[in-house]
Image (cartoon, rainbow, N blue to C red):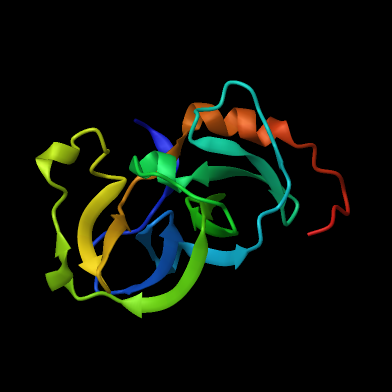
Amino acid sequence: MNTTGVVGEAQSPASWLMCRIGDRLLAVPLDCVVETMRPLPRQAVSGLPEFILGVSLIRGAAVPVIDVAAVMGTPGGPVDRLVTITRDDRVLALAVGAVIGVRTLDEAILHDVPPLLGAVDREVLSAIGSLDSGLLLVLGHARLVPDSVWAQVDGAVPVTAGAAS
């Protein structure tokens, strides 16, 4: 799938932003993170994949809001925070339940995704583990928004000069 919104390398020794999605933890490579914020109003756009909750106007740009729980194939919960990430000069927002903090992860706690989870794209979910007695999902090196969707997103929210950021 040729897409944009690349998320960083899964098992690098870098720092990770720890988030909660439902009853699970999500590790997002810190070098991808732009900011965290409260959820903003979003506009539904027909024809987008189900895992895109809509488009929000963030800092004057139309940004797709990704349902991380749906992408990971895990039950979600309430969305209380957005984590904006960037790659290839594009920004997208990950809908999460909570932002817990930043930490480094010992590679010894991370394991390859088992074959029984074959329905989950191994580039999206690059590793799993256990952290503080909870299931840890590691966001991998994946492009979450297909190129074909970016054209729809770009035209979804009219951006006017002097729009509030």
